[in-house]
Length: 165
Image 1 (cartoon, rainbow, N blue to C red):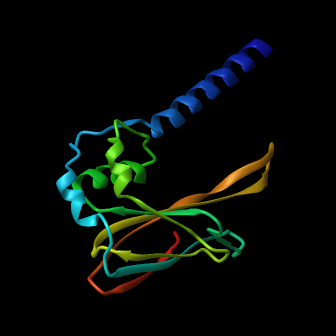
Image 2: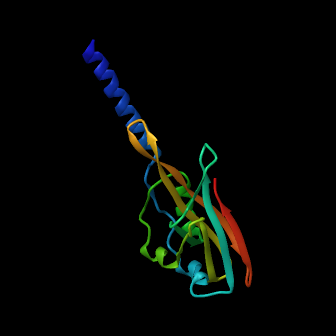
Image 3: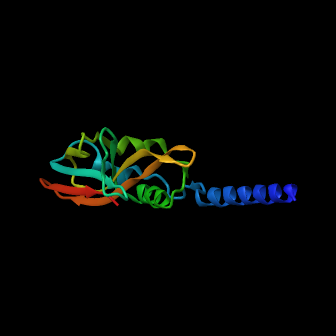
């Protein structure tokens, strides 16, 4: 009886692990990196994106992205494939190293505020991880999410975004 229960439990754990692993399938890039699409996002411009990144707990507490990196990513066919794969939690394989050259980063302040100044006008993806620990069944557990938003900014324009779920 004990062996049967142990075997049943082991089978359940293996099944759960397989299901979890199935959700995080790696994504292999198929869109070729086209540097021409990224060139309008090089250098400086006259636009600004300001924002705030935060999440609310089930109890209504606000968790700001204090000190976290906020990434600004130009919207191109290449970055759109990466963005779509990340929305489903996939790990992206085969990313061209040149892609990172065109991304910009800012650090959120204590209230999750961030700003990208002097950027070229265009369409951008913005993302920021917000995670914290909570007491769990087996000690502290990590909770939170990566907040994501897509926005567009024109020349000499300031756009304000709120990033939350």
